[in-house]
Length: 183
Length: 283
Image 1 (cartoon, helix red, strand yellow):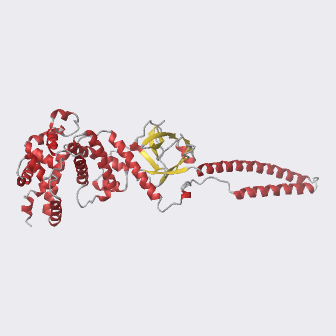
Image 2: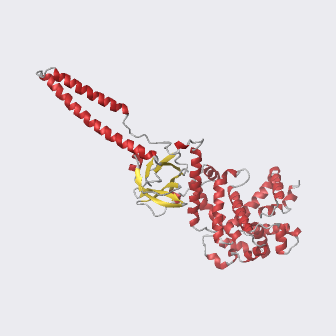
Image 3: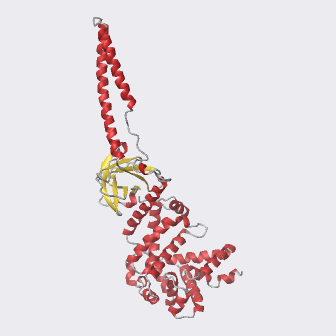
């Protein structure tokens, strides 16, 4: 069934609603690396990440009726499912908060030795982006997005006043967007 | 509200980083409905964030896809079963095929007619015989009738054999569980194949209603799914399986049957992405 078709977002959604497995296969082939990237970065454990990725795609397959085209793009919806499912798993595993910081510093993406494993992935671009952000900026984005931390948790982990979390997040994201613009 | 001030408040960045509280998210969504300018700003930030997230893509282990599709197929056949079982089905119907191929049965009326015709022929022959055999013209006619009678007798034997075959096939199928197999893509809707399976004798018969002809180096293969694991039930040829019933390998226990397209001669494990049909065994 290896078709090299490309589908528009509308065709994908219609195909999923019609329970078309060929479309679902296409969706998996095209989006699983991005979603697996999210899940793996949240959990930092390949075994759990594999199970969670499967769960994520089942949620997409079973829950496509819940997706509202008015509310946002399909990819955004899928990313949210991946992030939420992974973070729920992380929380249910009763991860200690301190461990999150520890995990972030052990993050596979930040260890250049790991980056050669998957040459297909845009690590060159990523490395360039990460170089242009300060360590705190990287950490604050990752704690919020990939670890699902609240403002209070971030304030405590980074040892900064609660009132400045939002401002620092804003600066971090603005910096990130500027770097992306230059690429 | 002052949109510019709201935009520079940091709420958008909090939102796309997943840091905004539920209340803030609701507030932002309703503000976006009011202000196209705000919506554009949020969408642009969202796109950039997604780019950053996508940069961290990782190819997942290859085994996940197969496992996923097995689960999805399970889902699908359960759905299909729900659709077809619309309304309560009385228990006694469960074992009887809901849709059956019209079998080429001999109508009982034919039997009656054949016997009557035979009796007529014999009677007439006897009558003619009685009428005096001197008349050679009659004699010719009589002999023609006798040979006709023999032809009819022979034909009746053929009919009888066919009828016995049909009846025994019917009896066999009546005692079997029917597993309707449906498409797993929208390209070929409807009921596409049926497995008749006797869990006691483990006998499996397969009939195909509608499948595309495979390429010369490919064959369809039937699988029984036992506790989530596919077990080979043999490859089949389209000609046999579409014309009638093809006997497949014995299956001791199964929750599902499925058909995949494999290389000629079959594969040890199914190519789940090339699954054409799947059906759940009822209760």
